[in-house]
Image 1 (spheres, rainbow, N blue to C red):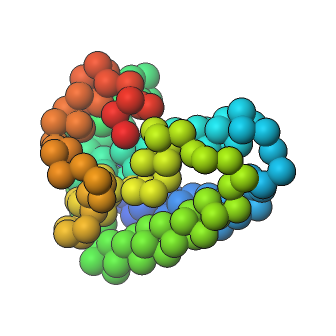
Image 2 (image 1 turned 120 degrees about the horizontal axis):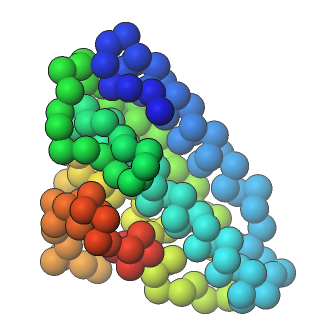
Length: 166
């Protein structure tokens, strides 16, 4: 855990930018075609869980909150630290939007129809982070009734299921 206090706050952002970039660059290396439907669903499910956790982590960082490693959630308290710079926010937004395109192209290689839960997370990845960055299109295309704050409150309280929330 890298604390969100100076001088470590910049290190936390840099680390997460690198992690996000490396993860999104690696996704096309996993083949979906030629696998059984069960194996394909397992790969997509693991990726969806990873994206969800990383998205929740980014939202925590963008709000200058502390990530609690014991409960895997952000704490309510806001720390006096420097928020990510506008440059870092722009880099993150660009990275997430290009990553969405990469994920969509990768899904075209699937040989079986996707499960609805996995498809929704993969087709609308990082919606929490993009909403925090002010992206107006950062919501599920087919769900106008999703309330980001309610979803985050449920996740922070530990009452939400990672797979069911998205």
